[in-house]
Amino acid sequence: MFTDKISFNDMPEAMVYLINKVNKLEVLLSNNAKSDNTTETDKWFNIEELCTYFPDRSARQMVYGWIEQRLIPYHKKGKKLQFLKSEIDNWLKADKLKTVDELQAEAVKAFNDKKRRTQL
Image (cartoon, rainbow, N blue to C red; front, side, top):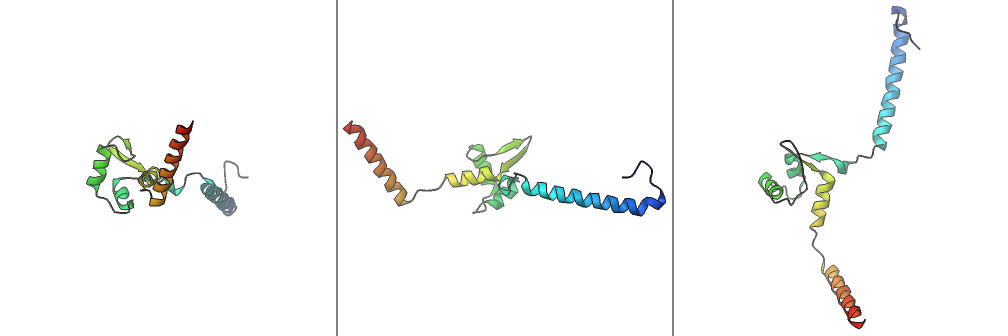
């Protein structure tokens, strides 16, 4: 719409044009952010944020112990430790203890499998 040179008389019209363009860009960016595949589960934590995220508010020394034993998923960029929320959530869920019903179902399945193998 505008060429290289804008006169003083064109300034109000140029400002309206620029404001409309900025508004359109904001709408496009917000729509893109909504459709972006990065979710809250892909948030990066530093060690302090991780300690406060844990349900039992684990101490930093405890987390460093887990890192040393390679028990917890982590990423290291230079000297900085980083933790991906989705990996931490999966790690926390992996330590779930089985219920009595789940243990009994596994025992019955194992017994039946063994019984079937001996009959063959």
